[in-house]
Image 1 (cartoon, rainbow, N blue to C red):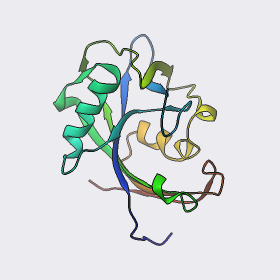
Image 2: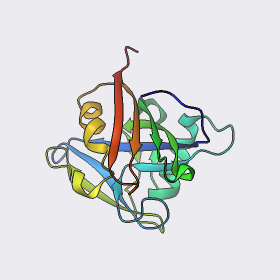
Image 3: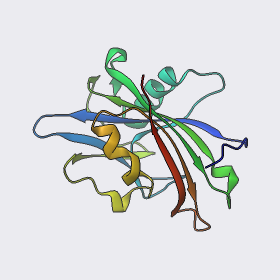
Image 4: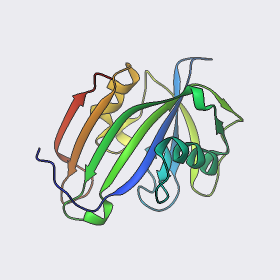
Length: 166
């Protein structure tokens, strides 16, 4: 895939991970806007000049009323999503995982939180790209990835994933 310069929405995404009562991750049912109805991690758009590490803490609090413990938030991937048939959907996303937080995830106007076992992630209800990269992140890999979507803005037509050494 050739790197191209085009307008991008800069955003964040976070997966809360827990081991009790079983290894699970928190997904959210998107209730409105871009991706409505899909399961996804928690996150959203970065404000102008907002560092991703600050943006993810703000977004997680806004969307599920949980405060992330900064020391437990790990940057795990940077992903470019291209929608050639709807370029206004293009995103550059900083992906994080968190293992400690304060509070209990709550439903808001934006998200309905849902814990799912890591052994049974419902990829069919998620964006098509998630099945390519999320299992690798959950195994501890750090990634840079690019995905391109087809005319239906749902199916992945091209992709590249690189493991980062850092």
